[in-house]
Amino acid sequence: MKIAISRMSIAAAAAYVAVEAAVAHAGAVDQAIVAAVADASGDLVALLRADGAFKASVGIAQDKAYTAAVFGVSTDALSDDLGANPSLHLGIALRPGVVLFAGGLPIVIDGQVIGGIGVSGGSEAEDRACAEAGLAALGQV
View 1: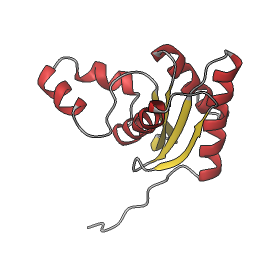
View 2: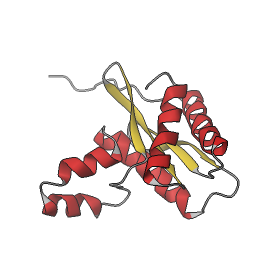
View 3: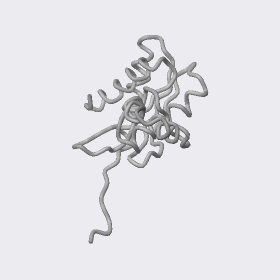
């Protein structure tokens, strides 16, 4: 019987690269966002709030990163996956820190989820595009 396992998690330096790239992408289209990266356990590693970004976006970005990391899928895909079961969808949506709309993406290396990136401050499409820019900066798109 195995008693312990080894689990990869995102490095702080990589997390900072991802949030900086997401915020820079938003700035290029004159959007003020917050980007957060969580580790494989959903704990915050890096967060960057652009000048002018909504205060509420801080918690939302962090929750999107958490959701993507712990469920291992994008926040909008998780919502879609749960859609066939309204009770389950509602139950998961009521869990603290869970977000079921676009803007959170898992960070995956060699098939293993090592974290998640969450973006808040724009539309769902803008948040997703900024999160994708963060992944692209890590070579993950």
